[in-house]
Image (cartoon, rainbow, N blue to C red; front, side, top):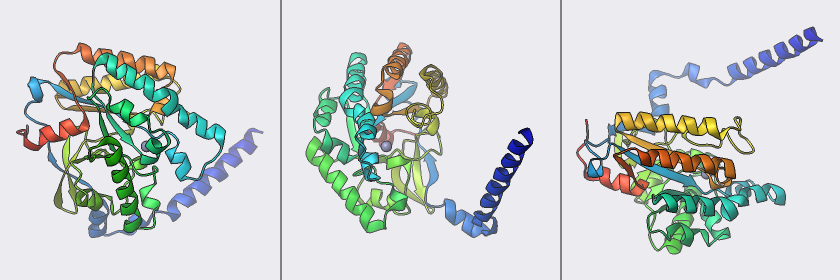
Length: 315
Ligand SMILES: [Zn+2]
């Protein structure tokens, strides 16, 4: 039996090895091709300011991607049971999150696929009620941008999303986060063309920076996110570490590092995942811990990006 298992494992390993070798076009790329491959989104000027408002040591942006059912519907999923687990985000998760934010009296940025808002129109007034929160764009239906037919389709969906959120909120959104955090080759150009103030989809630094594209400054401020600082790889249906305690310990240590460095902490959670009881308990504790530190500026992505426009930079 042991030998059979070993043989099966060897065959699988070899097959995976061949598959990997077959798909390595980069080994033949010239220096020019390698530079072109990474050129569309690069780090420009670091934007960490000499000081944050009120001489705060660190900026903290708590953000939520309000996916709910949108990403499932984009794939054509119609199973009521599958959809109901995502509907939890609107029915239960978001109200709990808003209650917690209000109790702590802190702002947050909510990136909403327009279809999420369309299916639950009560969400937007609920988010805006405190007057502290921001609503940003997260696609029309959480469409996966690299798989769209081209720039025209991407722009049509982007315009639909902007128009819907502008009508629903009374204000044109200025912040963007790509669905699934995935850009196409056209996304940066479309963000510039449509006048966004900032993007929050990339991960090249954990302090704010100006996004460069093909050697040119874009004027877009990047408030970077990271797969470490979100919960979907760890919790929920596809999660690999069902322990919110360990996860929020990691977030706490990330915050401590940002606090020591005097930069920025951006956390991204999803109401249909983090709105459950156990992660909510730990989110409450994390917010209390951050609030116990002196010199923390809680802000929306928009407030941070506007402040960075004119603030003297640290370097
Ligand atoms: Zn999302």
